[in-house]
Picture 1: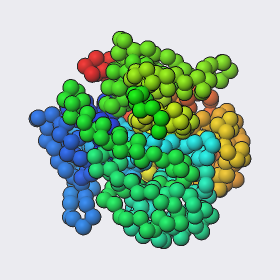
Picture 2 (picture 1 turned 180 degrees about the vertical axis):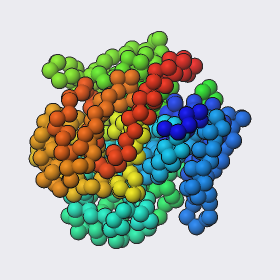
Picture 3 (picture 1 turned 120 degrees about the horizontal axis):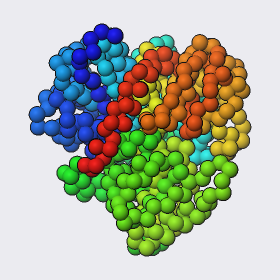
Picture 4 (picture 1 turned 135 degrees about the horizontal axis):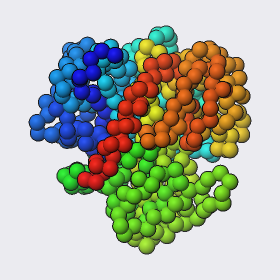
Amino acid sequence: MKQRVSSTVYLVGAGPGDPELLTVKAARLLERADLILHDDLVPPAIVALAGPHADVVNVGKRCGTKGITQDEINMRMIEGAQQGLSVVRLKSGDPGIFGRLAEELDALESAGVPFEVVPGITAGIAAAASLGVSLTDRRTSTRVVVVTNHRAHGTHSAEQTDWKNLAREDTTLVIYMPGHDFASLRAELFAAGLPPEIPAVVVSRASTPDQRFEFSTLAEFDALPHLDPPTILMIGRSLDRARPEAARESVILALNETALNLSSL
Amino acid sequence: MKQRVSSTVYLVGAGPGDPELLTVKAARLLERADLILHDDLVPPAIVALAGPHADVVNVGKRCGTKGITQDEINMRMIEGAQQGLSVVRLKSGDPGIFGRLAEELDALESAGVPFEVVPGITAGIAAAASLGVSLTDRRTSTRVVVVTNHRAHGTHSAEQTDWKNLAREDTTLVIYMPGHDFASLRAELFAAGLPPEIPAVVVSRASTPDQRFEFSTLAEFDALPHLDPPTILMIGRSLDRARPEAARESVILALNETALNLSSL
């Protein structure tokens, strides 16, 4: 334990994109923050919840652009806290699901800076809600597997995902960053024993006004159009009950209500 | 499509217990609802967010007590919506994670009642945040498996969980309703190939003032004390970095701030 004079850094989940799906705590921390360091994927409507005095910095990295490094992000957080600022590190979805949270916590801990993690609605859970789907269903789906197909995510073993026993009929697969090579993924899932008629849904920008769904089956999902990122691929019997109509109604409601609702926060 | 005159039923995630971890949308729907049908696990501080005119009904079932049946819950939702009431079906955590959401959606759909699912922070994600842990860590943990060990959950196959490939060193296992027979579970996880020194943490009532953690390893977790339900058992390399101090600080902050914060909603 080094210095204890610094303020706390809040690592906050921004949720899937709909400002109404922020937690009450996240909304209030944003309103009070002096310094907000946010991912590129956090939409403007959420960043706009910052108070007028806040210093708001987009620290996001996009494929192909040279952005701020992880070390620089860590340093900004630490320096801000040591200056006594109220620092919010705003990460899309939930910070602990494919959010590189662990590296940032390690850096804060090494610097003796106290922190608190505020969980958020992760995209897979938001997508299921938009679809009117339960990720578990005791009649068909006993478990959920949350995984990425993004090789550059850098697994410690650098090996391919072993889908055997992961890809089962009684499992809902929620695949973050599914990539573009759906043909290879389809072949791997077939090899793991999944039947061709099992439903597959690609979800783009879940919970936002730009939300899109494309429905298919394992047999045919390699022919799905590529939607705007961030996307999630969901596969499983639970998707049999997807109700895209419910999803559309939900987004239209959100469009009509969001501005009104947030103004009274 | 039968009658379309009924109002929408909102199936809303109450989150893990901390009222500040409700979504903004959930808080607002509660405030406006005419009829709230809530699970037994939803804490009084969240139920108290109902408006003064709301009819609030605990429809929860506890082991050993004879409660309201699922059919009765469905009927209450449908009748309320057909009377034009604003109905909130409030479920602990996220509705789509071991929440029997699918059966309720099927009933609403059969009755021609429109619905919307509002996602919530599920207990496993809240527990990780309280522990200062990232469920994925590209250095150690490439995936998350969300599963229940509760046999009475009623899998369609009625078979035991096949842990092979699920229980791996590069996976964070998040086991809901882990039951009391940790000795059998330990034996199954050993048989699946997990090493004895891998960390295991039991979390009781994540995010609430009663939150408790007990730390162990796979070799010894059968000796853990049984904590008050709801509990979650988490196993994986990602737990190596658990910071229970961060958790305690977080709860103390929540205790001091919650009453103040919610009063201005």
